[in-house]
Length: 293
Image 1: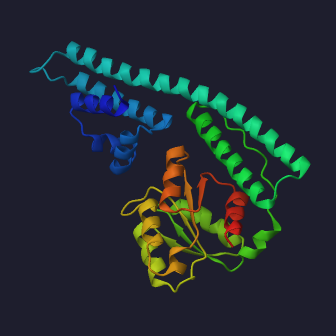
Image 2 (image 1 turned 45 degrees about the vertical axis):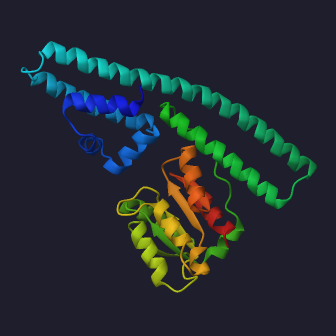
Image 3 (image 1 turned 90 degrees about the horizontal axis):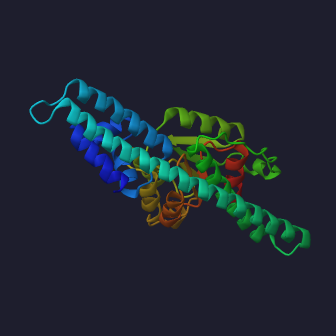
């Protein structure tokens, strides 16, 4: 039985809606529905789900529906549902362990290949750029799995920022995020490096801003993916379809906490130019912007 079906059955037994469950977990219902449909809930979200359902079970046991079944029946049925969820969670952990080992082997092999290429000088700058992107993908995936397994993530020393960052001075960035604190953090980083920042709270505001400003006004768009009103995916598709090609081709960088491969693939499909995961290093974000000058 799939996770979505199991959770739906448990909610039905408890008499709560999936929307109520999502709100108790601190998630938007639309985001929760998408994650259920794609089977893409993180371990942290699974744990929150189990905690919320556990509280609901305790409430149900304290005030059982005596007209339908006894308290003991309630207890046995609901615990059975919880056991099923926990079994799926454990199975997912084992799969993650296997993938983590595979990623370590792949990353070692990739680093060896890159090392030999550098030693023999058999690659040009474009090939090196692609190799760096591949290494970053493996790094992001490894970090995500480690966090899901509850392990401490060892951050690699930040690389020195390139002198090319100076070229960003005076460039305009449209920063799109529904979280005010996130915007303030990224905005401060960008301003410190000489960029001009304008803000939007959702994708709809971002599309309007691009339409209203003259072509080429924004040099970059840095956007979150999951937002109310209009998410980053839909906003990107609308911008890419604008009749003016200068507006439509503005570089769009996704900045999100979701590091799953399917999210990265979807971002590429809708026309995003870069995919960065939070928390992003200042050097990583700035170097990404420089590449699109």
